[in-house]
Picture 1 (cartoon, rainbow over the protein chains, first blue to last red):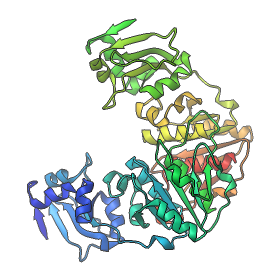
Picture 2 (cartoon, each protein chain N blue to C red; picture 1 turned 180 degrees about the horizontal axis):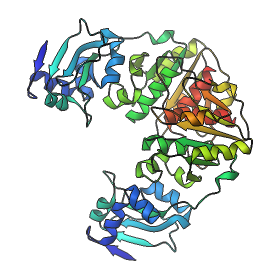
Picture 3 (cartoon, rainbow over the protein chains, first blue to last red; picture 1 turned 120 degrees about the vertical axis):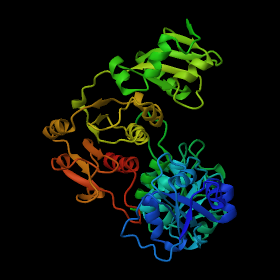
Picture 4 (cartoon, one colour; picture 1 turned 30 degrees about the vertical axis):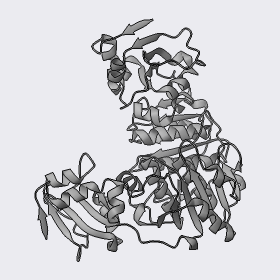
Length: 250
Length: 250
């Protein structure tokens, strides 16, 4: 078992860099922190490259960490690699999800330019709860291996396939499969209640401010809006996603 | 028009204290920041006690600020009273909402111990969008005049009545009026789809970790759960609120 005492250790420097998208993409790895997230990651063991454990904590006895690369570190080292104020003393280096064949999904969420990490994490958690087959993230969407996204996803990042892609191209793929594609729009479109629930659908949700790209909206089967009955200008994008996914899946 | 240059000015010190619940309750006032929130507050002018404007910004020309108490401040003063990293140069001191008669509402949201300010703000925004008549906050719920709550509510805090109260007592009031009361629960209860939409209802949502208090759940008409189809353990409380309110109001 390795043990690292110095915050100047080369590995520690490398782990810290994983808080940047550039380093994550260069290495194909990301870092997660905290008991709950690591426990979720353990369920898909092949993703974990290394478990980083602060020497002042004891691993839960029900965890099976056989064959895992465990690295003991001091509290100072843990603090240095953490981006939270009160690190829980456990972190893991994980490998990116394998490439997924996104063309065999039946219930799909397209995310067009959601920028707030908390929103994207909550959206992934909601898509997981709603039993969506996979999520396709279009350009301009925040990196889903960002640590705030992972935290807000509460581990759902490990439960369902998430890919980056060109939404216009994927829209054509699903169009050819004759799966209904629903855009979302504040202005035009029909009330979401007019879309009936189906076994197969794609839902496109958009940026917090500007919504779904117009060119995408022109190629959809229907564009849906959620009626606003009170004084609010709009719903939070995560809330809208929840209402629509649970309505569409029936 | 008053003008304040020093961060040591007595008023500045008082405004800063409004970031604490204690001072808000002692004075019956709270502070809001940013163009959008102040614009929302202007629609209910009687709430604004004073408009604080940084001398480097110009007020939007369409704003009607006649008869308002305007105080010019330096950038430094604005920074001192703000709790955001990049203040927009405009803030307002507002009075608490008037006391509302919560017993005449037909669509009511009970909030039992939601602790995250972002969650409560999003919940209030969602209740506003769903056209709920009012919100009753039970003990253990974060103060709705907390600045993070107000920011996440995106101004909805000014659109619908919000009161603090004893949820058990209010539950009895609405029980006597024979309005159906729906609790929410992960374990027991029926799928929310079995509750039909009605003109009148109360919905109780609960704490992020422990849910709705058991004693409340025993006095409801029905307790509802939202089915989880994937690997997520639960939905975010704001998302659950959105799905349930839009389902119940039909």
